[in-house]
Length: 157
Image 1 (cartoon, rainbow, N blue to C red):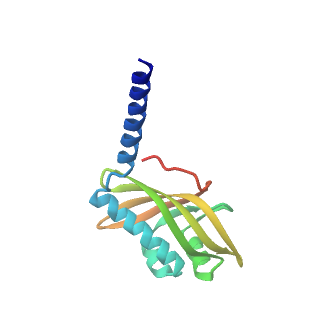
Image 2: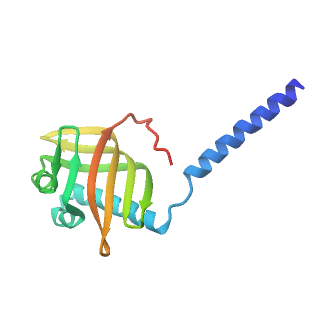
Image 3: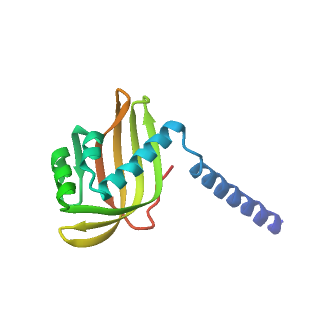
């Protein structure tokens, strides 16, 4: 009886692990993938200091929350252009996307960011929250927030 009990407990634990991992690996919808791709492209534009592309992406009322402060679109673009913060490389480890009304999207990304901050290189683990709103046929970023986390941080899907 004791052996049967351990077998059942073991099977339940295995089933629970399988269920959890399959939920986390559900492929994104076409709309979710569009936001994931746009977010990745944004990281590349930031690394390349492509303020022209970023200016088109960022909504005029967008806000950016960093470890040292919160500012608006023009200041973020100036910081990128001058290299005050140079987002050299963002390694994206995980993402989760939620769509609301087909016009609003929130993406959470766990990243390792290598950046030059006022001349000093920093490598930091973040969960980044980005909010997008579809305006006509284009997605515009409304907000970007960096949250410092441990490298073991997990995004719930």
